[in-house]
Length: 219
Image (cartoon, rainbow, N blue to C red; front, side, top):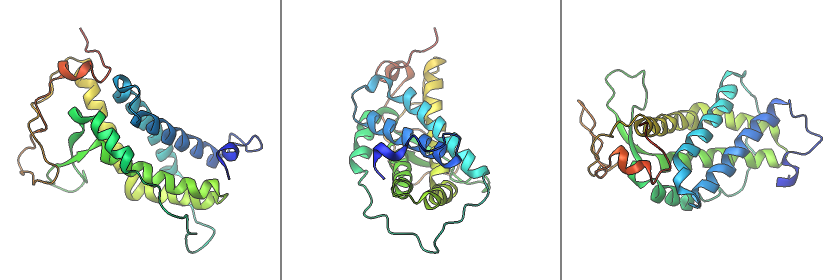
């Protein structure tokens, strides 16, 4: 199924599969465009919007009954599309605020925060969604929905949720004119202490990132 027929006129726009595919396709296109770096000034608020909308689709998949694929084994979707260029472009554009801290599982007691990267997260989400889109475009709608639902629970749902929290925090710091904690060289490979996780990735204040990231603090 080509891009031209992805949203063919014979498809019912009220159909669950069509709506989910529309939301996912919109996210894939939008983040790919952001990663080109043509409009870096609006990247963070635009990503905040797109991830928020994607998680609506994820919530619908999560609330839906278990989707059972037509075949016992997943058909071969072919080679996975490379997301390294997208990841690297996002990392360059988001460099001042790319690294953030995240608790992997909020229901595990006394779990220490771990460092993560928005660029890595978005690239991983894109990879998951593209995998299902290959099935959808090939006409394997149930397989696509099964994959999107399964990977929502196993990976992209929690990853996108963490990314949304980081993006929302950046926008809130800037719009409320609250300086970010000093960032001073955090390496995502280094171990974190149990007591507190210091943001350490260069000295960045809200006033310094508001302009480059297209946000205006509250005056």
